[in-house]
Length: 135
Image 1 (cartoon, helix red, strand yellow):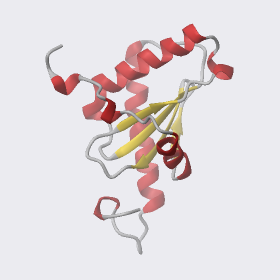
Image 2: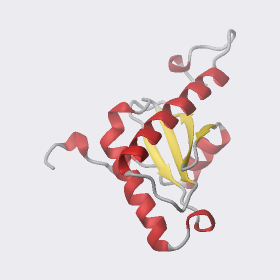
Image 3: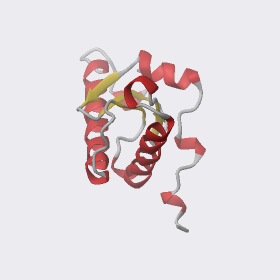
């Protein structure tokens, strides 16, 4: 695909342990039977995603890698639909694989739900709006 906007560059990935820790520390989460999505404000214009695919929950390396491939592709294709300015950490919760359409829908829906929860928890009457400065 020649359209660079459809790529999944390294700048849109959470890679360092500190980036994951920041999301888990300031987190808001939303989940369904397949996924749990944690969200935290990043201050960037684009959403970023990190994956935590546990051997205990998912199983062998083949199954874990399949989850990762499918989640990366769902993120890549739906990046414009995800909440801007949030870091997302996605954890699969089931050994069963949903259809790809269901996975895409769940990722977008849970990301928005977690972002709304974060905004609700971090913007009170005495606090500035989430986009106006540090949380």
